[in-house]
Length: 39
Image (tube, rainbow, N blue to C red):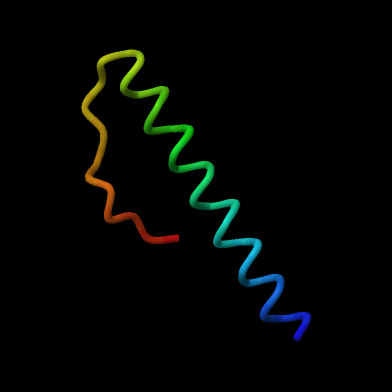
């Protein structure tokens, strides 16, 4: 149970970081890798 929770949160944090990075890249008009990211 606890291990699954840790895996879930690590995935959520990774996804949030990717979304933030993508927004920053769009703000600076930089080409960013496609959205099929791997955590």
